[in-house]
Length: 428
Image 1 (cartoon, helix red, strand yellow):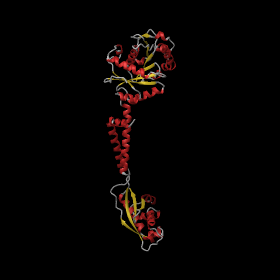
Image 2 (cartoon, one colour):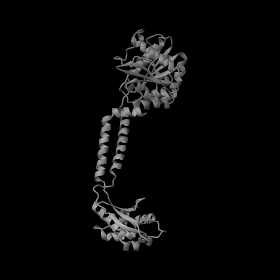
Image 3 (cartoon, one colour):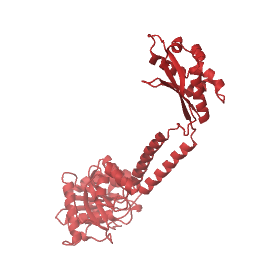
């Protein structure tokens, strides 16, 4: 999926995108509202080089030492008695930070607390302790007292806004999270529910060529291929040519399978078989929909065996019935017994079809829907399959899965026939 596909998914799923953005934004806002707040206040100390200071003392180095003293145990132990609340030494040490502003004479003392007034009080108390010459003399190296003159140049004031959590960072991360969640939700939902409704969508989802785009028949028993010269017959002629081109170097057997329940694949397969027979080819039309769940067989022949019986060992020739045109023979689904159909297909179908190929130029198999069972996929192993897709009946994601499973079983996906109400009457 490229950037354009993502953009299309976002547009199609814009109500969902808007909902995700609103929910995520509300969650970030609530998180910021209820999150514990921390306020920071800063007091500034001026550290001027003392008159008569030793030439061996580096004033910048001394200023850095003053900054390091801000959070020391010796300093914060003296701060405890100067602030209006109880804070243990470890709390104060983690809350206080000193920093020399490089290139200046200033050392900043910053204190953080959940109460803005307390944060200011702590910062001011630390600054007072540091500039107190008696205290500095006791807790620091003599060089600081001798090399610098420390004064408070700016006292800390209670801040108006909190510094933690960081609102800009939270909003930025929230925006990225919202966009990510909205995009993921839109793409997932679009791939799940967006149905295949045009030629481009069918080809993209199946990763296979569009063989034809046909009008959905009002009567699936109608055989337009029997009426040469008509527009409908010409469409099936083009479909037959497309199939021949795609299957030119492969097996003469092709399975026509619907993706969802319905008989549209039967209608397509029967007309393709008629069109092939019209070119002078010997064609076998096989009804592979074995089992009561697949509806009425193409050819009713209750007194003769069918595919099911042939798979069990019945003679193939005795199961064939003549089709509506010369050179076309039909192998009905047959009567159904207790034998498991998937096992029969796996063990015997390819053998029976190879035997049939001796007497026929083409074998067209009408397979059951792919969303019902795996019979069609199994029948297409070592041969070819065409997927019949009705517009707006299957999601692009589902069609993609079916196509991938067909290829995974070793079948060759020749292409897709799209059936809809407003077709492009053409074959690829």
